[in-house]
Amino acid sequence: MEYIDLRSDTVTKPTPAMREAMAKAEVGDDVFGDDPTINQLQELAASMTGKEAGLYVPSGTMGNLVGILAHCGRGDEAVLGARAHTVLYEGGGISYLGGVHSRQVMEQPDGSLKLDDIAAILRPDDIHQPPTKLVSIENTHNRCGGTFQTPEYIRSLADFAHERGLVVHMDGARVFNAAAAQKVDVNQLTGPVDSVTFCLSKGLCAPVGSVLCGSQVFINRARHIRKHLGGGMRQAGIIAAAGIVALETMTKRLVEDHARARTLAEGLSEISGLALDGMPPTNMVFFNLSESITLTVEQIEEKMKAHGVLVHATGARRFRLVTHYWIDDAALEKTISAFKEVLRG
Image (cartoon, rainbow, N blue to C red; front, side):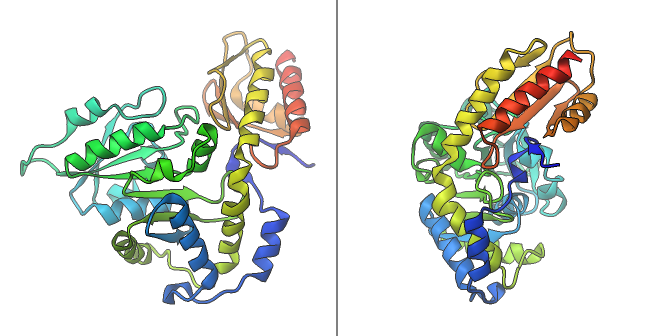
């Protein structure tokens, strides 16, 4: 059966143009720095984000890990949102592998970190306490509903941090969604921060990979850390070629995913028993089950699968559906119809 897969935008498959580019890619040994396709991807990513250099890494998790470890030493402290991906879903890598202490503050509903909250927990110069070195922001913010941060907020955060001798890292896994939602160039969101990592393998449809961007000095350090983590790849231009196609073409169509997410949310909002968070700001639709629904989320997942639709629960009574390139209007209609049927039964 050909499933409609709304579990995440990580399920996207490479487009025909990507497969063609991969088949024709010129490659070399990237550890020696002579894979021309990887070099092209890194240069393109740096240019688009307003940075001096880029580094291709296998995953967004590695991008965040390398980025934070390149900024912080053992015993340093990083300030992160309590619901940030790095806190919840990256295995505690910054602590386990880097000895970096995380200090967490609760995000605002839009996913931002309130500057007063950050100021309240900054460490004094005291040998009993870890020195605060970094603030990390997530844009878009997954667990805050796919919300985005504005250029004005990013600039204010960066100014706040830099005035206090701190650096800012952006987990921009879906930063191109944030840019598309606001109709701004992505470098308006990434330019003020010291480093940013973004995923090619989510809404941009590439099969694998992320790019970490920052200053040339920072990327030189990051390259060493990537090697320590086993992330040095050889003729990886074959997969980097898909990333180039992603940046050149897929970034321009993300508004379609956002529009379909709103259409999906509108349809689901009419179904009794589903309580939506509201209209989705980007490509994620979140909703809770009301007490009138007696089915468990596991039962709903199985019944929806039987209807040819894959969905994913993010809590005991909560779902997240994610639109992407492979979800068309017909898929939305089928999904809404399947939910009506499943919940009616």
